Amino acid sequence: MTYPTFALDDITSLHESAQVEFKLARGRDGQGQLPEDIWATYSSFANTLGGEIILGVREDRGHFTIEGIPNPQPVLQEFWEIIDNPSRVSCNILAISDVQLIEIMNKKLIRIRVPLAPEHLKPVFIGTDVYTGSYFRVGDADMHASRKQVMQMLRRAHHCNKLFKAR
View 1: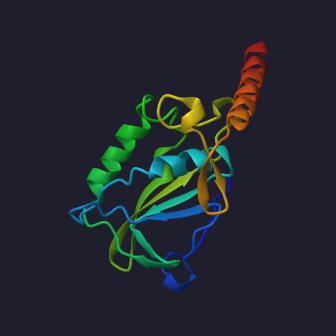
View 2 (view 1 turned 180 degrees about the vertical axis):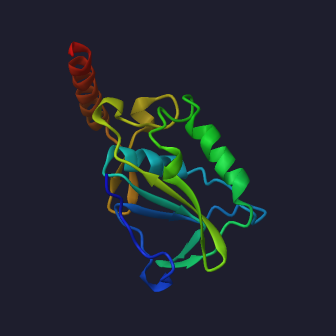
């Protein structure tokens, strides 16, 4: 599996795309907080092409600055607690190595590499309702999957699971 790569330390070249999403993740106290909208991005990357979520970067009208997360450990702990909770996220497709604490310009960032989910696990969705919690990535946006798109993924997953059981 290959992941998109880019140079985070070249601020002038930072931009979001179909496979890169930046989130500030500073919270009210400025020390760090997991953004609630991270889960739509996780679902959309898992259901589309995979991608990277970088926490600790501010966007202001298309311009990005590295802000960092002063206290990233509670953010990481909350991330792992939620992603391993099946009532919050349908499945965790990440390996420990997919989530990294990195430092750029003396600021701590969290880099999350989300692989494309295997067909038999799709759709990856948030919450408990597959129809309201499934997302796709369209350009640099997370979009709700339509009922038809969800049903197509469910049919493919069912077909893959039948093939797997037949072996």
